[in-house]
Length: 390
Image 1: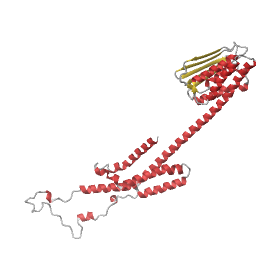
Image 2: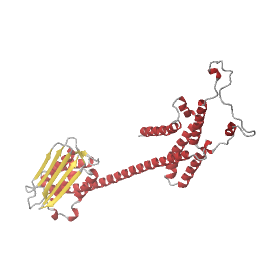
Image 3: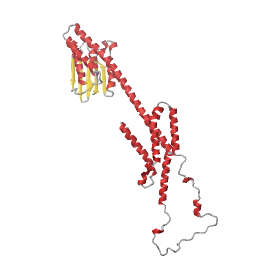
Image 4: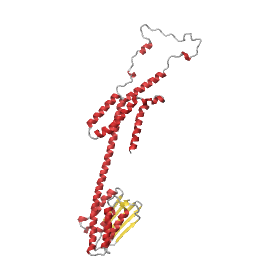
């Protein structure tokens, strides 16, 4: 970026400083003398003046005075620079050099008196020239040539202008261009800071949502294992092992933004295994995975929340309550489908909906514009379908 910026500035200055040269010699023949102006003090005064104005404004005046609200000092220095350009007249001096060069060239091209040595001798060279004799003029009156020679120079013969409008215009243009560049740069930096602040806020909120999920999930799972332990169920130890695997995933992996999809699916399988240990024949579980996880990644616990919700609010000891969970992976898309009976009315009102509400917010942060979540409740069924670009 710095190299590109430097090249752009150099190209701009080369173009800017070549314009006076082109303007000065657009009426002359191109030759060696056309580039002599590059070595004159007037040209380098012109270049140095506007280089100084540009970089003084860019590195001192605008960032340290104007953008910090020190307007009085800023406009005072700009006014002093304006007066300096007005008095120095850098462009006028270049034009004066141009006029002198043209006048000198014109004098060299003006024909002089005829040279007799360029003509061969003639036998008639002693004879008077066949031209009419000059007409006599009254005594005391000046000769015609003397009349034009003694005329005072008119206003059109003056080479030095009293006001250098071009130098003033270039000064205003350089100041305005510098302000536009610096203000645009500051605006870009402000936007970057705003984006970073928004990202930090979203990350903090996401961390808070994850912290909410962990105790919520752990609470439900420990209740299930407690039930197995109270009844001296032989699968208590395997349940603890499965919980250990789940907690390892939740503590070690979900601290990152994305985790391997395979790990998320393994966590779901362990969770379903825990649930099967305590459920009876009235709650058949159909868990299907179609496609290969391969190198795909996903935000942690996105799918796990809906699986946990299905077991929390879709199980009844008196009524048949089958649970269907299906994950389809194809190319760069994932489709998650879960369907269960809806017994949420029997659950405690103060504990419903926490996981799904958090997951909606996490989807907005992790997959903006890249997900489609559909939740339907009707005819005693609760259906969730999530489409993700992974």
